[in-house]
Image 1 (cartoon, one colour):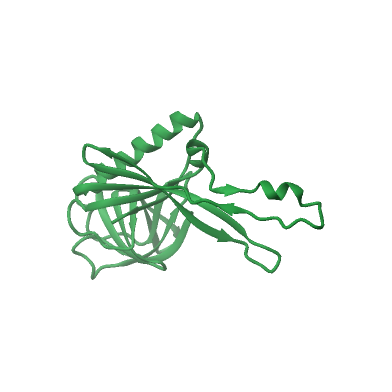
Image 2: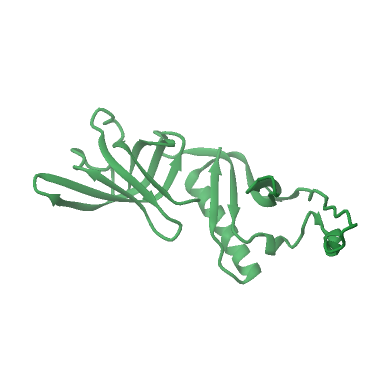
Length: 217
């Protein structure tokens, strides 16, 4: 997931009429941090509660939150801080345990684990020849599907491009891993499965990887 730094309004479950303004930040190497102007009048439910909010990109649900305390930067104005262990973008999940049927994840450097390319660029070796007509052949990589006790896992390759201009463009393919479950599965269990995948791929390529995208449906 990319870095996030967005202002918005935030509230506790069943207290949507008492929102506070604040800023939500996240970096792949840091924490999910919420800083509020003021502090909630009510306490989080349990040691690790939820916080709901709306930021520029839409609705957000913060899970397993705990307080970092209250402080004063300017006389008369207090601020409070919270850290969340996980964050769901795009929806307010009011149910105690969100359930989903699938998850799509994208890790960095998974190409080296898969070890396959859809590109045949042998014609580009003769670019210095003014009479050459270089071509790049593309042979899409078929999905790889494996079953497990609670569903199936699919490795799917998705095309994308960037830096498009008159001079050229950068065309690339990203491997996505789709986990499909036979029955609705709690988010915490899905997160464990994604963690197992990350550990497995890290072991296979003998290098650390980053989780660049994590989408549940």
